[in-house]
Amino acid sequence: MSVDTILIKRHNHRVHPCDRTQKLALLEHLINLHSDKEILVLSALDISTLEDKIDADNVSFVQDKDLLENPKVKCDMIISLDLSTSPEAYVQRLNQTSTYALLLADDKDQQELYKIETLMKRTLTKEVISSFEPESYIKDREAAKDLKERQEYNRQNQEERDEKRKKAWAKQKKESKYLGKDEDGKPIFSGKSGERNHRFDGTPRSEDEKEYAGKEKSQRRAGSKPWEKKENNTNNNDWRNKSSNNDTKPTTAKRPPRVIKMPKQKKSAEG
Image (tube, rainbow, N blue to C red):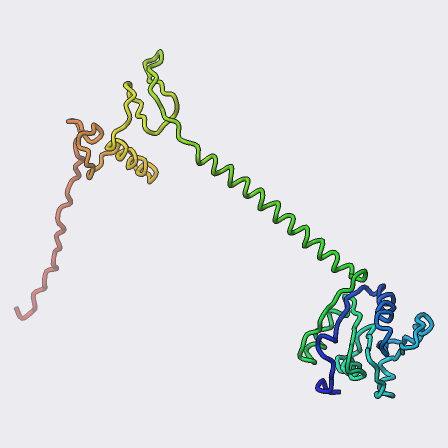
């Protein structure tokens, strides 16, 4: 059966997700909802027992194998209780009507819908009916709700942490004041500050001293020793650069030049 013969419009061909235990109740709900239409209920299994459970004059129950014997059965709406054994057999169901087609699909049926969509080259519209929502859909919705709440909670906490961090950064740096000297003659300051140089008079460091301290600190991190003599030091007045008179450069004995002796030539017999 070719898919080109399907006359059902896309929005009239719908899939109603539900649990397997809800299919009978959902079928009764759809039959009552469309009581003005001729309905054909289809299934791959024997559904003759449903005729005793559902009492409606506008409903007929047909198995897939019966469509091969009587393919001219026509109706206003078909309701599939399950999927056919093959996508081609499901397309044969659709040719029984030109108006409406509904499919009751549980989780297992929904995993096989891609085969039908591939054959028909179009997707099927899913519509969840109230009071017949599958349990998996409810769990996914609750999980999505929990995830949204966690994300909102983390966002609020992040905003609070950012606000505390901004307040901490906004605090002004306390000025360090010279308060005098202690019993040992050491200077006393009101707070810690990088501007002081521990002089007895409490005066701040000059710009040259700050620059020298920064270079000294970077060299110390690099592994150099601050008390070693530096050749390219611009501060010639620093006592660290002054060498004592007893300093002497170590001397090493020079190697004598290498003399290469040429071998003597033997005198020939004629000579």
